[in-house]
Image (cartoon, rainbow over all chains, first blue to last red; front, side):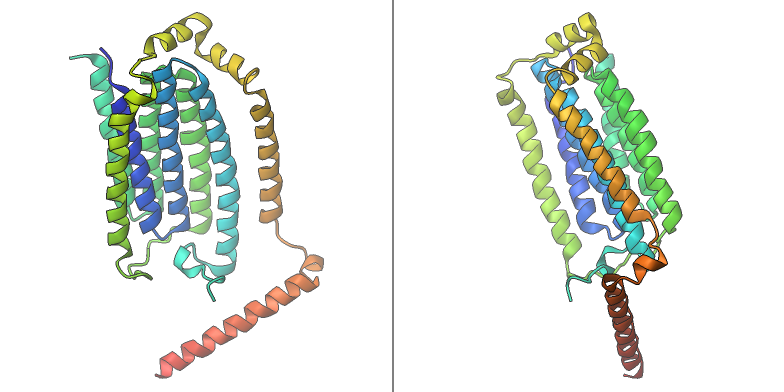
Length: 101
Length: 208
């Protein structure tokens, strides 16, 4: 007897929710980025779970693509954050309001 | 008690505990470390489900390379411990928690109900075990990646090149000649103007 795939999906759902709440409540741009990573990880877990459920390898291949996109996104995002920090000396997202005015 | 159930339980508690700890850790470095913990737990989940190569990649690329990048940037920028306690939108945190709770209920409901519907009630674990035994996990992945998913794989390399070039352009310092071009000169004068205005209003507030 093995663990029901539903439990993995429950875990992934809860982690994704925590990621969303983190993005909505935290202020530091780097921390927000880390919560986005958490959400991507939760989605990876769903891919792997359904790969097992269907008995194919395709879900695991898709995890690679998510991984590559996450890496590219992190690299560009962190470069932008450090650029903003260079101008504003802050990584607080509330203070980045140039477009609001 | 089944060993798989025990490992799953440990993994579940570890992953969820680290994620929740991320929410409440004030220090950005601590958040990064808890994220590494959650990712390690997820690697365990991948192992449990027969995704051996993905589990290894998860540890090497995610918990290794990407998190080191995060820590590098935290090191470069310094830790900002004074995370604002003032909410720009009143009640934002409460509403965020409420919406999060709603999302959690929805996702858990879908997870429990939907998994049976998605596969027609069939469990393909046997088929995946056979696949992992006969060509092997890595070989099966490679065959799929280089035949069925060849085009997305190649597009991925384009994405990486674009990201590298973009970051190089973003991160370099502008030379003096470039800073003298009209666009940057205008931007700089606007920033100076804005700064002067801010200081003026600050001074006014100080007087008031």
